[in-house]
Length: 271
Image 1 (spheres, one colour):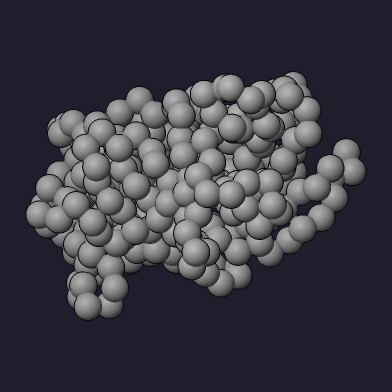
Image 2 (image 1 turned 60 degrees about the vertical axis):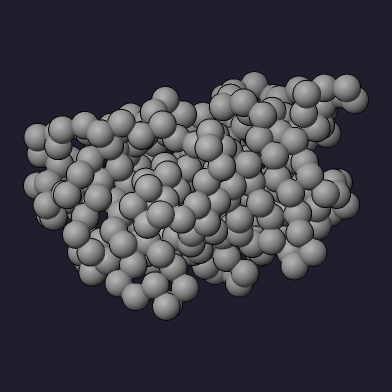
């Protein structure tokens, strides 16, 4: 069985967010324990498993995502990586429809090699600052928001880009304050550098201390910053050590996420 490691939301290797991708030949997923074992072995933020669906189905491929610790409802970078593999191997052209736990998702390939994902927009709800979050982050939030059922994060607005970049949070303490983790964000210090806002994502509850580039988080970041900046089309920089850019386009209940991907490893799974 072929297994690939793809760096997503980047146009160069060893940047962006790496994801494992397995294209399955059968019309059903193997048992959950095997899927989790593979994801734990790959040990990247997500490993995506996909298999083709019969003609006439609502989607073209079924898609699931596993972190090293658990299955998740929605993942952007591993969906981008999967679409990249399908197109570069000749298994798909144009727009691909995926059936996932969060509904039908689409991925459209462009001539320049980038791919646009169509995901549900996260419903943001302002919430009081939970006790202990400021201390765990080491920074004072300006606002905090719940991101809804599919993501399950706490979105935390900070004062500026420098504060976001300088964070050294208490990761175990953050685990007490959301289902998946914490998204921190601030406006770009200088939008002329090619991004409108910055973010970092800490997901200790699914086995990821810091995620390099998180597509699903941008379904919450897009409406958050579109409301503040007055524009539907924006670019977010996730300021992790690997960094990555996500172009976001808010379209009401849907958010478009555009980025590139690069295959860095193409091998064989023997187990």
